[in-house]
Image (cartoon, rainbow, N blue to C red; front, side):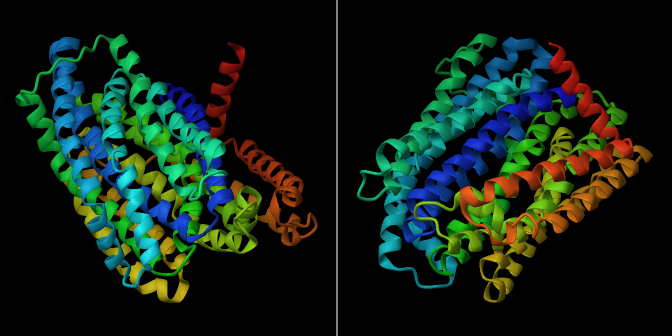
Length: 518
């Protein structure tokens, strides 16, 4: 229940962030559509974003948080903050160098990206993408320093502050576009400026809250044994995160070679996937790691197993019905959310096509985000890396194999297939640390979730033609029939869950009732 309450609190913020992320993509769709400029911005933002996930997220989850927890347990806040300060100072030096090299070498980076596509990229696309990459590359330093502060706050069980920073990034991009994109000769540069402002806000917003915990910065650049231990833990994770990011990189590169709109439609589709994950799965995986780390350090394997199973049940409770609904309503969803301005019905069809294949992997991605922190909690960073290499091989092979036949849909399907392989291997090897993980409650929960999902499928198939979903397009035409379908589908799912006494529904309702009483 404590995990559920923490995840619910974070979900509200994360959901707000994801909704704003969706609005950000809607603004991008309005001004850029699925044009060459939209693809250029998408790729240029993807390159520093790739390194952000590699350096910031990989380091925080695998190296920084577990060692910070150990230092706090061994020597209290003073020892923990000493380690955090030295780690932050090391990152200040390293990321300044990386950002500088990225700005200077943007042309070479984009040229390599073009080679990976396997197709000839137009000079105009190459030039615009290079310029935008040069503009946005400093974002990696800003957001990586913000990730160190996030790691401190999360270790002290302060989750909402760092979760809110993604809201600030989206607000900055939306505000920049709304204020200046209409007057700009090339609106893509306005979006790039918004990214940089957002990075500054993400860093600056967390500083007062970290200081409130008692952390103080000093220019201490002596790494010390704790920082070396964290670096040793994160090295294999950097390879693992790098493997994942190579997947993303090659996927985007292959899409770039498929023609205008392929990159953009994949990214719009991916935004809808991330919106779903952000509702609960991301929040859940974030709050699970500190609890798993503490229980693993104490040798409480029963608690670790209970936490993992609980997270699996909650993830499936959310992901099963959403997967089915968005597969059945993929093009309608894209049209409702994006079809305006430069974004046409053709763009909706391209995005909806990719969304079908992306949604196939939703549950597997969510479960993977639950399983990986378990390995980190046991200080095992090598196993996820080895599995990531296997998943990379699957993804890269399928990207090149399927793209000629399924276009950008083949790339989305390759991503989903690699997520399935990765999650299955993680689940199989998890037992080496935890022992067998199974119970009757989980079996009953998954069965109830599947039954509710079947009801959702039956309802959507029954009402889509009578409500005119098949013949409607755009926000105005689709809002009412789509809204009615959505409400009816949620009601059908909850009704089946109530009849079957779904255990997760009972606990979710308990949390809601407690919050309403406050």
